[in-house]
Image (cartoon, rainbow, N blue to C red; front, side, top):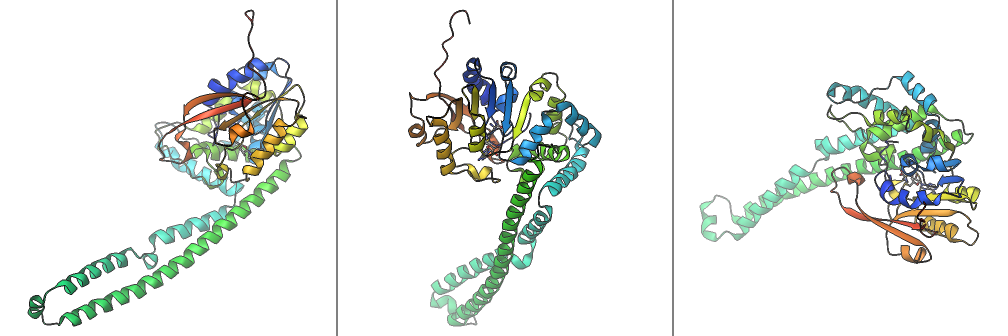
Length: 401
Ligand SMILES: C[S@@+](CC[C@H](N)C(=O)[O-])C[C@H]1O[C@@H](n2cnc3c(N)ncnc32)[C@H](O)[C@@H]1O
């Protein structure tokens, strides 16, 4: 959907996931993405929507569920966006950055805890700029005085005779200055510690408030009524911040007129002849945890594509914890004797994975890829290996297929 998303399968789906799903959909009537996120695997597939009767989106993040609920009626949603007249960055028009940033901030304030966020920004600025909290100058002065002290201590008597003060007097005078500076430094450090404590308390408060707001939003959409305004705002935040990492805390990405808007790319999909049929094919957008959605939809004719948060990267999805216990619970469900459907499961390899899904009982396909520089702005690109684990053998195509 042209939505940057942590762990989004936009690049790996066509080369690893689709070739291992498409040939296995013959007896499938329901395709379920258990951890759908930005739903790249389904949205990019030219075949799934043609081959299966029902497509189910699921994500525990209610903002994403709501977004896809709205997008599954692309004509109505794009009309709503038209009426809202949303500012978009445009190549060659740097002056658009300002209204876009203002709109971005408004979206964040309306969806998340904007007041506490503003208070955190203010305190961060104070910590950086207030001279009463800055010890750098004192540290420099202390270093110089200590060097001076060392030189005096090392001087021989001849030099000392040339000065009016005795060696001891000069040493004591520098020690006095050092002590004064140390007292000043202590005061500044304790004032700084108080501010830092205040900041940490605010960060905790923002986390709690945002979790409460998310849960409230989850309750609001539990009746399956889509909220177009919230969806549009969430899409705006996702498309205007760096790689969609944690929208709650994201900052506006200013293209300064060098590139066009990613929100426009998202909108284009809502209005594209290619994407409208696959969006309209989405039958239900669930806001469940993986256990529920698997239990609810499992059948011999269901295909589950599972792309859980990666091992040890759970903090990216700060809306909900996903730790070792959840990975084990997922394994328990997918490998239990009672499980009836087909599944494909994405991971980066890690030591415990081959014990959880041993070959050849499960089929593994692997693909080297360049990791998106998306984890954090400024981080170098590195390579990794994507693994796809399946509970069915590779289909051997006969010559007539
Ligand atoms: C790796 S991302 C999926 C990315 C997706 N395949 C794509 O291409 O955009 C994992 C997703 O799992 C969701 N998630 C985290 N915990 C979950 C849970 N307990 N049940 C269902 N979804 C969960 C996160 O909100 C996130 O959207």
